[in-house]
Image (tube, rainbow, N blue to C red):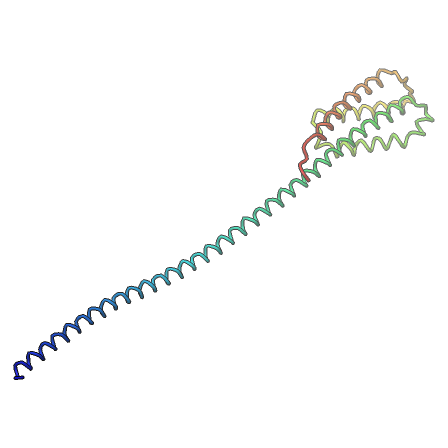
Length: 214
């Protein structure tokens, strides 16, 4: 083999080696690019996943806090309703009791006052304590029921009470004994009956109002 053949063979080998090296370099380059892409994608996915988890955790915390605030507001609202309902029930009971008390007190005063008008001096002396108790009781009952009574009815009750006391006082002061069918007694009894009917209507209307569930 002469030198030229040797050089030709050497160049052929070098060309093949260069081709192989280039192929290997290209393959390595594509492999490296793919690895870089996968690495970037993986890092990006982890970063995005971590951010999503953090955001999800934050949203869950905010949601739980919002739900807790809503529950507290609901409990406060229910407690407020319960308090108002309780106050309304107590006020309704107080109103009904006051109306009943004033109706009973007026009836008691009229009976005792008219008894004083027709009684003898001895009977008046015997009944004095009951009469004075009736006078004091009606004043207390009117004061208690004043805010619950319709104004015209409250005026009628006050006027009737005053007229009963005035008539009984005149009879006791002048030692006058009236007959049971005296026109003044009949007038007072008629007015008392009218007031009693008005009181009955007011009490029944108040008792029939819805009180709600306790």
